Length: 50
Image (tube, rainbow, N blue to C red; front, side, top):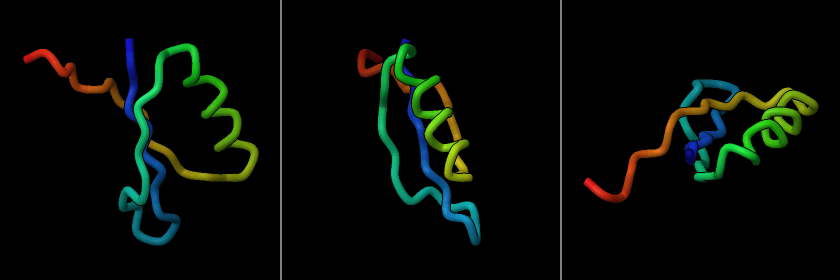
């Protein structure tokens, strides 16, 4: 499964960057964001085959 991770602006919460990663990478990215106090939103990535 793949997830989209959006990095959020500290002031207004708008998405400033996004990336799609596999499930194995989510924990590492969450740990990095937590260590620097970065706000992120994680959601399932949309399937390319619709």
